[in-house]
Image (cartoon, rainbow, N blue to C red; front, side):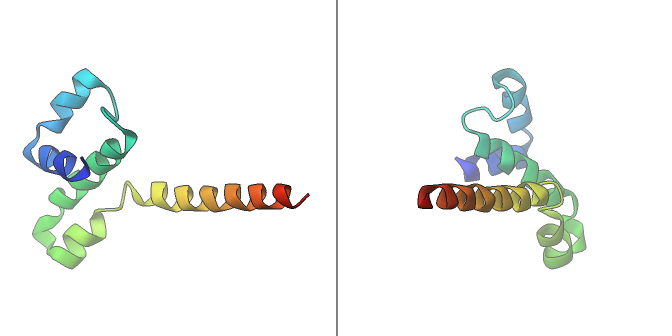
Length: 84
C-alpha cells in the first residue's frame, strides 16, 4: 500500500483520491508516504544523495523522530509501572 501510494503521488493521482476519501485514506501510513514523496520528487534534479535522499524526510523527519521518541518513553513508563 505504501509503494502504491508513492506511485500514485508521483503520478499526481493520490491527492485527488485523498480529497474525496480524506487525509490518510485507507490507513495513516499512506498519508505518511504521501508526505515523503513530493519533496523527493521536487529536489530530484539536485542528484540522488543531496536531492532525493536528503530532502525526502524534510517533512516526515520530525514525525519519525517524535514517533520513535514517544514510543520509547511510553514503553519505559509501562515497564516501570509493571515493576510495581
